[in-house]
Amino acid sequence: MHSRLFFLLPLLPLACSSSSSTSTPTDTGITSLDSTPSDTLSSDTLSADTHVAIDAPAGARTIDNCTTDVSADAPAFFRTYFRCVTIITTADAVVITTDDLPPHLSYYYGASSPNYATFDVRGGDYHPNPNKLKSKKFSIKVPKSPVAKGLTITSAMVDGVVGTSKDEFAMGQVGVALDAVAVFNPLAAPGDDIATERFTFDEYDAHPAPDGVYHYHTSSKGPLEVMVAVGASKGATPGSASVELFGVMCDGTIVFGCTELDGSAPTGTLDAQGGHVGDIKDAAGAVHFAARYHTHVCPTSATGRKFTPEIQYYSSCGL
Image (cartoon, rainbow, N blue to C red; front, side):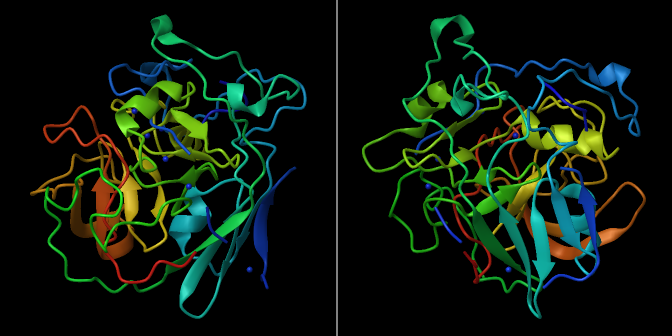
């Protein structure tokens, strides 16, 4: 790890006038599903409002030195929780633009980068894919008032196979994590298997596609480090952080880990991709979204959902 710590998700591409803003200075891939990502800091030692300095190589890109530019009229959810992105609003959407460079170390940066880290083979089971991550600027347009398709998402729809449902999220960049990394659906390219591809994940449970797009298919400590950085969570280990928010999909679906935004456990019945409809409110009781569909990536839960959502719940997905 590196940089300062922040709040704490085991596969392909897409495409903004800003008022006053806040600014900080300047396929194929899933997390280990059968191992717990390591973390430098124990959740027992972090208070919710602590910002802890972590050593980073000179010149490395971190959450503290990447550029975050969010329009002052953006909803509080986006102003509070997203880093290393540019966010503006239109009449009907929130537009998130990122260059997809992770603010943490990765083998996939390449040995010449200050963000390079040796690949952890985790006992010999893991191995890097041949790709290197590249800066890949893209945008998603999250509708301010998403319209539900009226789906009941069943296990028959969430089958892990590309092209079996017209309601699948497209391949490529269909979401953005809190740390500006692309979010892909949980499907491997035809001929591949996501359960096999996960063995090419780095220590942040991500990897680059052949075109260099670095992305998540599952839970990662990367977005949770942002949550710790903004004082919204203790710890950055998926499955044990006090609040686990990972990012947003292009249709407006919010992606959580094992908790809701206020730190409580999900209640009610979750659908086949770990989703349900409910108010999204923070620990202070502020409701960011009323009756919003959201999913939970939580391998340790009773449902054991390991991946990002496969089925698009809302009708519009702006890429």
